[in-house]
Image (tube, rainbow, N blue to C red; front, side):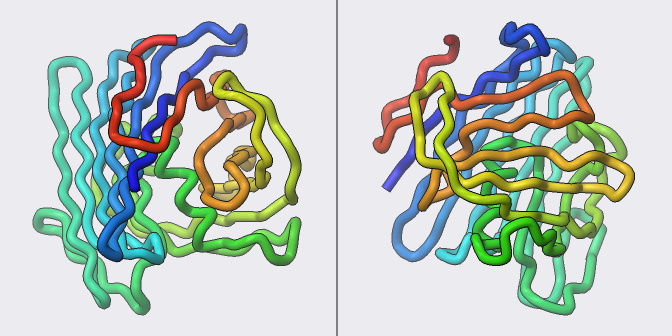
Length: 219
């Protein structure tokens, strides 16, 4: 099964400043996220793939960033007791729940580790990322972190791609940052919309389909 989608990056006035296209593939007891992020306002292109088990826990990942004529390429191998990226090795006390490489379609995957119990309660989710920065392009190295995730409740929401039954979550990446409000499609966690007081930008799903056909590159 393949879900394909497109997310618009918008400024405070609603103008599109970039986009993300993504495929979510589930077959043979495995899952794969492939995403291309184009941030035209800061001249950044990010290409990400994350391989996962059927439980959405990561097995491996890759993040390539082009910006200002330079390239960063990081590859991650996630084992049951350690994570490896180049010369870096991080020991793991338990299998890793989440690998955060900064596509918005990937941000939504963390909800599968939080669930929908105890509304309003923040729960720490162990994670590894390549960058703890708003745009995911600063201080690039493998680093462990905890992401606090709260399920806020169900509802319905309108985005450019249509009207959806939704689950509302809040994500807090750092204690000194405000949480981001994330809505995903109820049931499968498809990214719908995110707003974050840390930045004036906001992000919404503009196209999606079940099937391998690519989504359009512009709205």
